Image 1 (cartoon, rainbow, N blue to C red):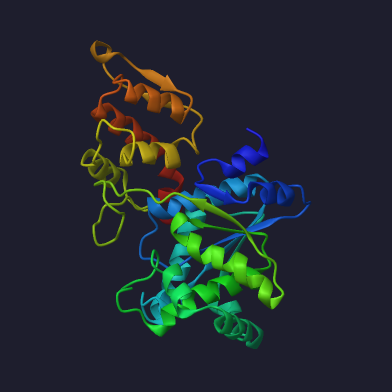
Image 2: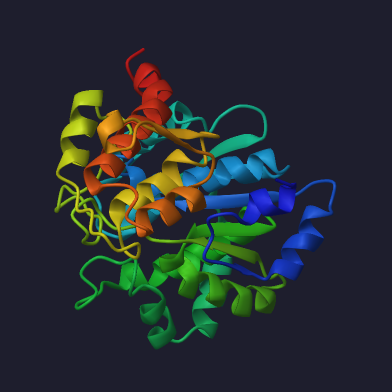
Length: 316
């Protein structure tokens, strides 16, 4: 796989691919993703974390913004609480492999409280309508039926983050798209460059519904082997390919970190079978050659292997 294919695999879109090719031709290139501090780093976060590791391996400098001030504005906790969670989340990111040369962690409040930053926020707030700001937050904000003024500042700050960090590309889930498109449209009005943007899919929770802490339908990077097996055993696994959370786990978490995955089963049910790609496995499942229970078992063991270094790191 060449560096461009590595950069774009498992993405929903790149705005634009021509811009990505131009950036990748540069001797130095950088990408950032921002994360509101969270009590658990789970498979939902791991989609973009895996992509950041792909981009690191494709030659990008990776900047991770631990967005403690954004979390505060989005009603996720007090400043002390979100600062403590920022430290924990950094440890989680490092545990799954996002560390080393070419990876930098930046705490939001270390760059967002300067006079230059605040002036840029105010300049953009004059240009962007309240309606556009609210629409950009529809997918990421809490309690958006009665939004706070702070939540309208949130997307403008995210735009200024891109400029302040000086990165070439902004990475996020597809729920970040509206904010990123605002950045492309309005950052040039303050003399900043329009960023290249890359978006990853939003995966289903294990029960087939939207992944959320309140549903408890996720696997944390800190879960034990027994916890992973217990959760995966209960996972929704329909015969269909689309919206199948077990197949999504295999595609976005197991195969990116493993070159082959082995299905183990008794000879009377077809015996063991090795898969060298997700596409090969998906085709076999669609053809009825893999039972849902066997798919769950194969995915579970692959996920346990992928997350083993994280469990060891977190327990040090």
